[in-house]
Length: 263
Picture 1 (cartoon, helix red, strand yellow):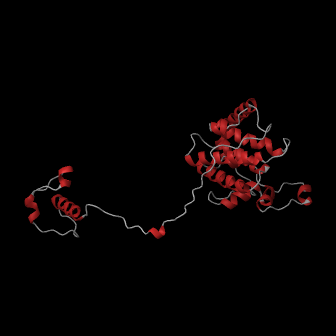
Picture 2: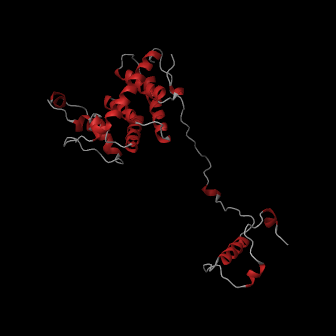
Picture 3: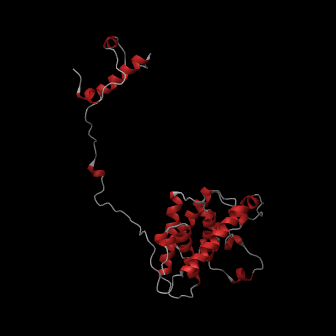
């Protein structure tokens, strides 16, 4: 008599009953196809019909906390958001810059960097923060009078600008990694010009369609910009234009329309 399982799931490759008379061992490799099928059937017959997982309730957290990030940008204070015309113009400018970067990437990628430009490895998060922002900002060192009066620029202290000869050498995975490092730094710090320059350059190098990680990062960036903007007290604050620009690029160029500033 066939079992209920056999009735519901008929054998695709039935084995002759006569084949079952010979001895075989489960712990030995099969010597032929028929013996293999017999081993499979024997192993299946030894499995219980119902399996119950043994869970230790002490390991379950009683009070689990779920962090849910706000999906939209914070509304700008009255008069702090840009006009639609301004946003459209910025998107046009940004699109042209992206085309130029793409067109000349191979040329700039082949250029040699100066001896003082030592790019960090892709996974060196702290190294990239120092490289892009400069040691002064990274270590929160106040700029001295000697630094401001120096005839030459100390990029180690002030941060290396995102020259085309530098950003053109970054692979897409490195672009995403550096963007992640800087957005993470921005979550805990204020907006500074060095950060704005690098964010703009990295967004200009970010290829479409976006990978899920990059998609999440740029939305995080726009939300953080809106949060900083919400606390500005003066329309003449030099950070306002840059913050509006970041939100505009993410929302309008990368089509995250729910984050866009409305007139």
